[in-house]
Amino acid sequence: MVGLELGTVRDVALAVVVGAVVLAVIAASIIKVVVSKLAVVAALLIVAAVVWQQRGAVVDCADGVGRTLSEGTETDTTCTFFGRDVTVASPRD
Image 1 (cartoon, one colour):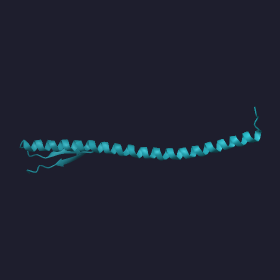
Image 2 (cartoon, one colour; image 1 turned 180 degrees about the vertical axis):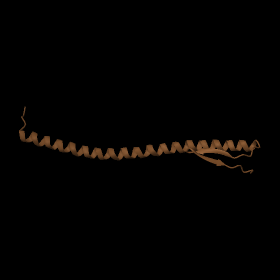
Image 3 (cartoon, helix red, strand yellow; image 1 turned 135 degrees about the horizontal axis):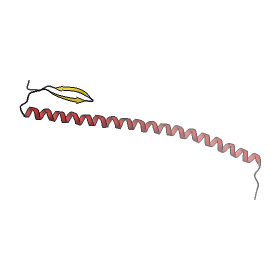
Image 4 (tube, helix red, strand yellow; image 1 turned 45 degrees about the vertical axis):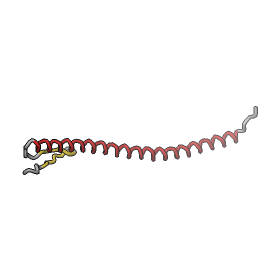
């Protein structure tokens, strides 16, 4: 079995440490970019889901206005959009 010299072991260990630090910096940079992209995608999906839900509520309210008008009632209807009241005036007024 061949023995290693102290200088060789020291140089190889230093090279491994430097290589590991460089790879860690590169990995951190890549992970930062990936996490940022995932955060943006998640935020946009949440916004899309909330807007879709609000859209459904407005459509339901509009259907209610149509039913009210078909029954002969001519009163204004109040709907909500993102928690704000929106008055839908009867076109028969």
